[in-house]
Length: 204
Image 1 (cartoon, rainbow, N blue to C red):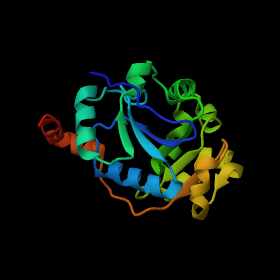
Image 2 (image 1 turned 180 degrees about the vertical axis):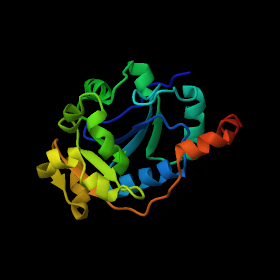
Image 3 (image 1 turned 180 degrees about the horizontal axis):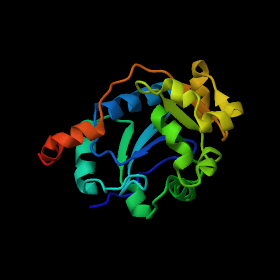
């Protein structure tokens, strides 16, 4: 069952952490808490995608991933949302267009791990994404150097906000991005998925 669109107030700044969350894990929880603190966000939404266009095989059913996400991510400023399923969007650029239409006056910040910054040029309309919303990048183990030398980082080098000024990101106009180094947990969705246990846990 899909959930209603969450209510937001004009002037709020919402961080968006999108992905398949197949399954969600403590690494997702950790970067969410760090993003709230480092970027001065009012709230964070986990946007669980119906499917990932860059992955050959589809994820577990959305309702199972939603249940698992709500079980693991319990924070008064975090919303687990199936917005993409309700809005009928497939790509991040489309989702951002829909969010800006549905929530006029709300500021959005896209959140990602450093590994996704490396992959960003593979995304549909990736430059439109960068030029639509500020982006907060949180370092993951082993990805710091590759991310800072990535194509996206080079193309938009002039739009970078230094990590020590990370709270400026919430008010910045796109294109703007900020890379912060944080102590990271090294959980892997693929490794957890391979055990199969998370799907049983989500049904409890």
